Length: 501
Image 1: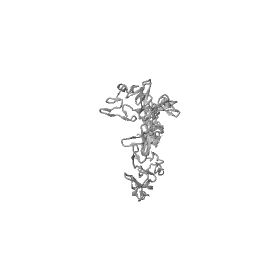
Image 2 (image 1 turned 180 degrees about the horizontal axis):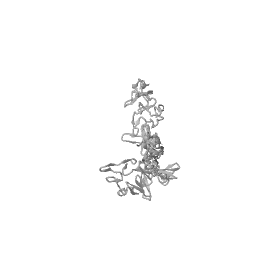
Image 3 (image 1 turned 120 degrees about the horizontal axis):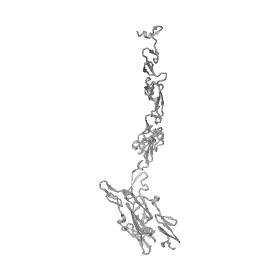
């Protein structure tokens, strides 16, 4: 078989060549994906597969985490924690990339270290950090621009030829191949050797299972052994098969038979611990509350609550459910239906009905909602009434006394506005909002062509509740003093004047 992988050009960049019988195949390195035969970089930041806590920056074949500066710094390359600052003296520890008493001065890493990005890198300073851009033939590896090609951290050494290099696999161990891409199986390639304490003739002792790792190997030990190489015997499973019995306490000890049998486990009794203890038979054996019902179980017991109650978190006491009915309270899960005004598993969370503004359906200013436990109360503004302040007060019907509203038989009508009403006076003798103001008929008299004054012949006009009266001067009579009195009637003195004698 020809090993095609010996040729450096067998696979493209960022890939590993795998030789097979009569052929070979290429696989992309971690952080790259096969794109029509080419291994292209995976942008973990854009895909959301990174584990950064705050900011993620994609790099070739990987990504880097960063924190919001200047108040955070990376603790483990992933987690961001606060810097240490003091209100009197400022910061005692700055975020990486910052300096100064208040840690607000940017450090120019590029100016401080000309080779911070490696020989093949170009450094660009950024606020609180810097960016490395690699030249052709180099790639970013752990913050430095190194020659492209060598895998698994192998040292890349220049051959002196244009773009010539070779990978020194001995610098990392347990890898071979042109690019140090092939992991050596430490289990199958194991060579016996002496450690400081024991001789290893095989990778794992005492029938331990060898697991190859990127560096070295690990051993999975049988139950009775432990240690890096399964070299330490132990008795951890002495109680595994219940040597004391199913319901007996088994304790590990250091001497054969490496276990000790103790008392019965809680909930069992008799010499062999085979009989279940009925804790419900005696109230001293259980902690159920007074109103609870005790139910015996194998090795233990359960407490049950009466209708309308459910078990509390301690599973020994009961609490009342605010359910819609006792039947709606499930002893295990709580309420299946709550009383109006409550919510939650136990129906003990008050619903804030005021959040929906139920008191302002008619008008935004109609009422103020006051939430109460399990309900609410609307406080109506003047002129509104009803449980939801949803209709106007009938002002005309609300007057307790006639003197409070329209007077003198005036007609009252609601205006359709809060506290709004108006009076229609039925007689011209009264005026005003409530028809309560008397109109002086003498003063307000309107002359006509036939009657210029309210009273004739110099009579005095006197205002009355309805209309007015005229006080006639001597010698005149009539409603308006319009008629002269006759002194003689049939040649006799008029009776009116007779009474004056």
